[in-house]
Length: 372
Image (cartoon, rainbow, N blue to C red; front, side, top):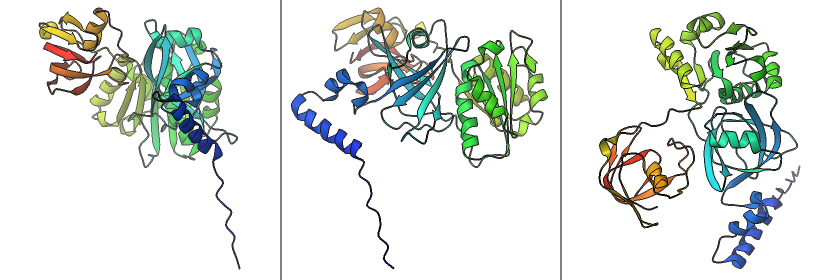
């Protein structure tokens, strides 16, 4: 018997794109062709992964849900985040958001769906809430984060989320369904009122499954099974077995701290995995004040007042690229040419010349020269 193997189909789209970029590279020299491709269509760019917004949902109070179609594959593990970059008034800003995958048989790669809470002081969240529309383009970074499900899967899982902290948890629950998980999963979800619940249809579909329970708790409404902010009695009510169960928590710092305290009292702190969607800003000290900061590229010299290099650069009239301002997105890195800096998160001091540092979380100690 003769078996004839079918020839492997050629993925022409990738080959054509590569040939196009190579041809444009000759024409655009000495500039990279991306400089011109971005003007025509950002999704043609090869040096970054842009995504087009295909759906905008503002049905939930203070929450925005957008669905985007990436130009290139982006497949984070359930619970991981990707960086999202947008330009606001000409300045590039980057934030970290956790997506859920939207699979479809007709598409080669999944869309991504983000739910973004509106924060009064949030430059990016306010921009997206006010301006995002179908057809807009955003830039995506690579998936990252350790907020992921354990392997092998335990027989029971507990999730606690508040507001837009739902997104990574929803991604995890959807992933469990997709892989055929037959254990028990419980989600305790906090919002202000029923009107503040985003992605209601997805939550209801999950709740219809026999092994998944969704418990709503409202802080400003008598509706729902539970009322008020997180309380230890809530855990006892929905998951009396919580202390020996892997628990995934995403929400504001106050809620996360409260849950950690409850588990610590039970000697079960190792069961808690957390993700805070709004981090506390780093604390800086004036103890490092003194000396001068030399911004080498711009020729600006400023007196060191002890705050972070990013804040002092902005105070000196510079506009360095930055994103989260909390040391997460790594979009504000610059080379420290000389001098000493202190990481305001850890207190670690470093003086190695030529090292690339994050200027949003590093403060100068004495005289410092940085490539800005």
